[in-house]
Length: 221
Length: 211
Image 1 (cartoon, rainbow over the protein chains, first blue to last red):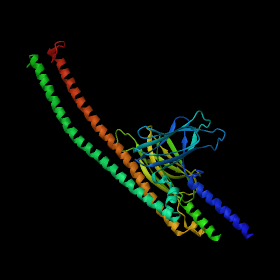
Image 2: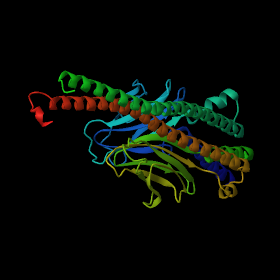
Image 3: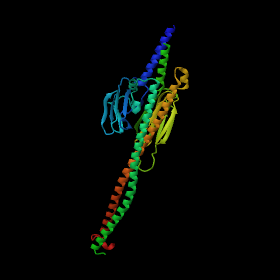
Image 4: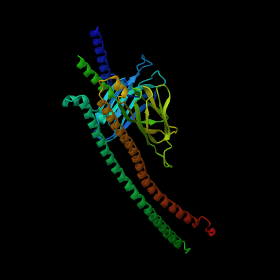
């Protein structure tokens, strides 16, 4: 009797672990993504301003709860800020893409519905978009450094703090660039205003000179 | 067997306590744009921020703003902000389920909104009491992680605001150059027209005795 109870408890615990593993490893991506509605016409685009040398990992799939017989498919196009095509897929219901950014700027992912679909309201797409520290593969780090449990969690926290520091340095650099532009514009406003006064004077002198010459010619002066 | 069961419990609890999701994306809002996010546990702290990034206003100094609403799975409005060009939000999820985050743009010009949503779970006293193999250290680690996530959230907000500021700066720079050159050309054109008009007044074809 006791052994039956033990084995049943063991089975429930193992199934609980399996559930945890699936939730955290995205094998069954049920609860780890945002849902977007793709309209029937036009594309639904999401973008993010990402800096240079950042890992981007994304996973998407189409949800087909109400109409299981109409398998809605989408086309995906991911473009870099300079227009390069990073990922392109047509007529799929799920997909995965990953890339490391080589230039800083706005990265755009566009989803369009394929063909004429039945539901008039549009289709729901689940998108799991991870950049930077969130996209880090902790399993390989744990295997390589042979750490686990609490030590792995503390290692994650340390890397997270480092990522925050790097982000702050990046923000500082951006702020310095913007301050330069601001100061240049400030200088230009002053310079152009004074120059406009100069242009005004020059133009009126030319006017007067031209009219004097004209009246001389007409023998009115 | 007993020790292995304890280890299994610890691993399971560790895995369960650190689930948290982060999304930082921009969407273009034409009229209404909704994003859905699943909250696993009741009582989870849902936090985030959003900034309206792309707006080219001609006159005026600030954007009239967009509206933001959060709807719970039971169709109740959990959180609502009206007429703002960027804000932070935070609330405790009253129940688990699918939450809807909607942006409403009351004006005809499409706006780009950069938003960030984070759902964080900290194992509570209740979870500690239920499972005696859950160490208080896991709670502290989860709290530390949530604190780091809140710093990350502030950073993303700052970054989005910086993008908007940069947009305004670039627009000012372009305007200064374009409007100054236009002003000089107009000035020259106005004075040329003046001269031409005066010349015409004195020309022989028009009766110049009138002048």
